[in-house]
Image (cartoon, rainbow, N blue to C red; front, top):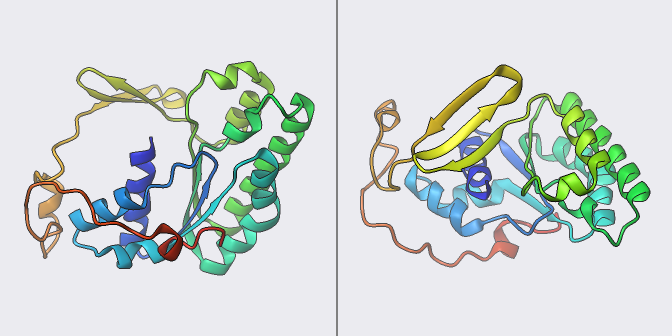
Length: 215
């Protein structure tokens, strides 16, 4: 799932958009983003400065970002994509009373929808697993009632199973090796992959310098 959000961030930048990334699970991966950018012929400095990241470590911090800062930040940078990584994770903290966490999450969900409707940005929220959600079913209910579309990703022996329950759609995605060309690579006048070579570890990226942590 974390690799998916990195892919979406690079794709948004390729389309000329800025990205607002709210991280509730310490999941943002600058090295992975830089590696994906390199595959499509972009330097890390072409991509990372356009991804605006804020991290939260408690449900109260997450609620503050979503209720007080998200809408303004999306408008400020003209974001076309908003990623809410591990959105419900912090609201499932058992040290926070359920009634308080539920109210904070409900208000946060309303703020997210309002920001999406006013800006027209695509909002992608991820959940790091269903097990914890079943312990706080009221938050699970708010999450699934708020979204326009739920998509499930399940690891499968033959690849990645992608399910859209509302539409009755189910597909199996089989990824290719990172340095292997695909039909999509031939859709562009100039090669999207500048040169095929063995995969190497990406160079160190100073996340605090290029991802503007904390906005």
